[in-house]
Structure formats: C-alpha cells, structure tokens
Image (tube, rainbow, N blue to C red):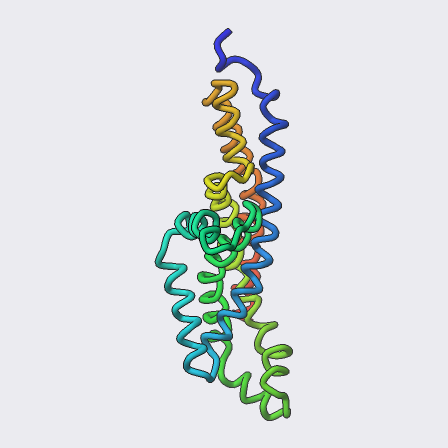
Length: 220
C-alpha cells in the first residue's frame, strides 16, 4: 500500500507528546522572558549610566546574534567552563533571554507612550516613583504592550523548534525521529504543520482581540 494513503493517526501519539514538550517550553520561557523584559527595560531607563550601558549591550548582543548560536553556546560551550545545563534549562534560559531583548523594547515603548502629564499628576498626588509606576503608568502601559507581547509569544511557539538541535524531544525533534523510523515524511511533516498551526492560531486570535482593545483604550 502507498504510504501516502496509510492513515496518519498512528503517528499522532508520539507527535502530541512532543507537542506537549513544546507547550511546556513555551509557557515557562514566556514567563521568564516577560519578567526579564521588565528588568532589562527598567535597567535601560535607570539613572545610573553604567546600568544603562550594560542593559543596552545585553539587548544589542542578543538581538544581533543568532538564537541558534546562543543555544549552542549555552549547551555546548559552557560545560568547558564547568557550567553544565540540561536541555530543558538551556532552552528556557536561551530562548527567554533572546525574547527578553525584544520584549524590553516593547516595555520601553509602552511606558514611553504614557504622557508626561500622568507622571506629573501622580507626583502632585504625592506618589513615590515606585507607586507611580505601579498604580498609574504600568496599568495603562500594559494595555498598549499586550498586542506586541502576543506577537512575540506566537514567534516563541515557532522558535521552540530550534531546541530540537540541543536534543530536546519537542515537536520538531519528534517529527524527525518518526521520519527516520517510519519513512513517512509527507505525513509526519504534514501533521507537524497542522499541530503547530493548532497551537499558534488561538494565540493569533487573542493577539487580534488585544489589538482591538488596545486601539479602543488609545481612542478613549
């Protein structure tokens, strides 16, 4: 029987297991990247010049080099210096740092979009700098940031395929294994495409919803 006409459903269990790892990496990495984005963004706005310089170097290096090379460095080079990370930890740290370099710019632009009048009003009310950001600036800025963060999250889902190169058995790695063992490349990669789409499309819908609400917020 032609393998193109063999029902592909027997391939799903192993691929769905890999998809589970992909979702795990995505969720943990998204949390790490979200927090780092704010840390780096505030570091770039810090009053101390050396802090701003270090944060700028962090952003430019991570944005200006390949994510694959960054993962390889963490997984293959650091052990030579006595630092060994397992594949999952490497994936989370590597992708989290890479994504935070872009996320920090989202945070900076979101905060910058809030008018100076908001800062002055908070100061007039006697709020400290921390209270101003916590109660006045960030709640408004987060609405503006969410569409961009949503787009970064979609990119992260697809970027997780890179971690297959450091032996983490996520969806792409599982697909490669099944092509080798079954020889059914057309069906395997077809299912991989469908699964990636099924994971990314709900996020795309949520991003559109966030963009609509952000637009209404700006108009209001």
